[in-house]
Length: 32
Image (cartoon, rainbow, N blue to C red):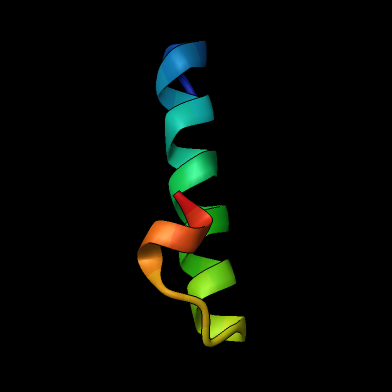
């Protein structure tokens, strides 16, 4: 992708958090 590793990991974590929010009724604080 050409992006730095830490940027990739950060984006991956954000995407996983977004998916978790979409598939559950947990609050943001429960996932964070």
